[in-house]
Every structure is written in structure tokens, then in C-alpha cells.
Image (cartoon, rainbow, N blue to C red; front, side, top):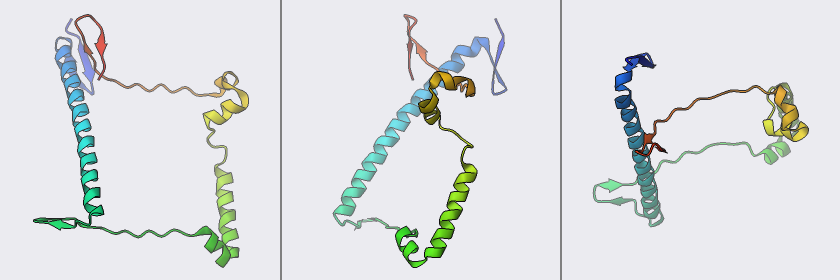
Length: 147
């Protein structure tokens, strides 16, 4: 059977299917391993950096810790309301108007199910199927192993 299997418009022959799937599986295993290593290294870096900062170590030999400071502004609502009551009411009313305009455009599934029940709600729902793919390695006994 030399039927071509199309994967993103690059045909893979049926005879090479095992090789292609093995490569995908091997790459997924390497990604998993490297992701775990990356997470471990980030945690190690954060721990070491935290220790250095809490110990007031800012430099050593050819290395130094650079500190970047970023200031963000946010409105203190209570203070704004006390200082500018008319403007506060105007902004509050604008916010209410925006909320009303957007109300009802989406309905949370949990809210609707809570009100009318899952079975009653079912005909009013759209179903969406999402496909995800993974390649698993089959063991000699025919069982499969996960990624």
C-alpha cells in the first residue's frame, strides 16, 4: 500500500509512516525533556537571584546585578471620588453604559446550566470539536505509552 498521507501539504508515503511518526514522537520527547530542564533552570535561577538580592549582593568579580525600576500609575478610586465627585459619576455612568452594551453577548455555560439545567440547555448550545494530535509509542504487547 503506497498511499500518500498528506501532512501540511508535504506528502508522507505509507511506507515511511513509521519513520515519520517515530521522528514526531522523538521530537515530542525531546521537547518535554527540554521543557522540564528549562523549568528546573528557571527555578534555580530565581532561587539564586532571590538569595543574592536578600543578602544585598549586587556584584562579584566580573558580574553584577542590574536593577530596573518601573513605576506604574493607577487611579485611587476613593481619592478620585472624594476629589472629583462629578467626574467620578460621569465615568461610573460611562462604565455602566459600556457594560449594558456588552451584556448578553456571551453567556457563561455554568450560569445558564445553573438556571435551567444541563439537559434543558443542551438544544441551545453549539458544539465545537477540537482535534489535538500526539504520537505515542506502542509497546510490544500492543499497549500504548503516553508522551
